[in-house]
Amino acid sequence: MFDIVKELGCSFPNVEATTRYDGSPVLKVHGVFMAGLAMHASAEPNTLVVRTEFEEREGLLEDAPETYYVTDFYRRYPLVLVRLSLLKRDVLRELLAGSWRMAAAKRQKRSHDANENPPAVQHGGIDLA
Image (tube, rainbow, N blue to C red; front, side, top):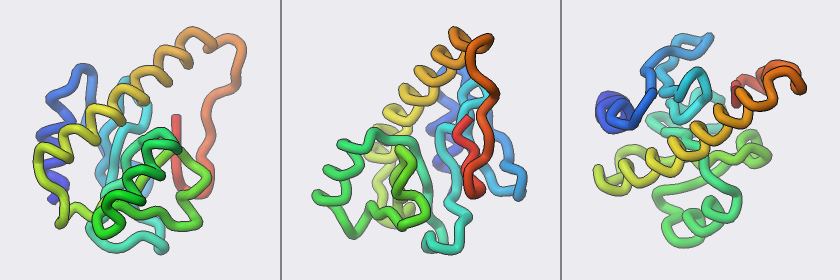
């Protein structure tokens, strides 16, 4: 099922399909996390995790709780969990576009602030670099 995510995600500029430290597939923009399979035990199987603004996440959770959810583990991060089996291709592309914008913006900020900030670290298995 990640094949469709990979196909759509890699259509955006500078997106690389790679694997996380645990071997699970992820998409990154210049090394910055964009989307991947949710691997934490609190997530349901076949769940995608994508970047999203907190306000947008609340709207998604309210509008389609059968498709979108968040667990306590992921709640503190600007991410939303998505049940891939319930997602239509056009909606997936839209989610990935928003996640791509956030990852690209983070990458730009990281490049700009490279000398001022230490490198990103993993927090509970989520590398938001």
